[in-house]
Image (cartoon, rainbow, N blue to C red):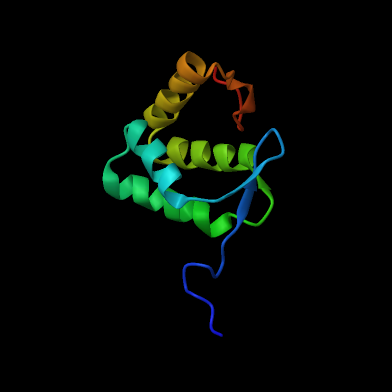
Length: 102
């Protein structure tokens, strides 16, 4: 019996608490849009992250890669994401990869 195309290549992301959930590119796209990226850039970010996603990838690595994509395209979008994380999700900025701001 042939596999359905939507089943081929699915990968699970491992959340901080150990739960596994499927990687959903649209979540990355929506996050990028909320950070200020225009739709075409948000889709490109989602595609870039999806290309490197692998089964068992930690959600923290997904977050890091999204932040890198945002920073590379427009540092303001990265800052918007981080501001949201600090204000709404109560996350610190310590998980951000890269050199400290000067």
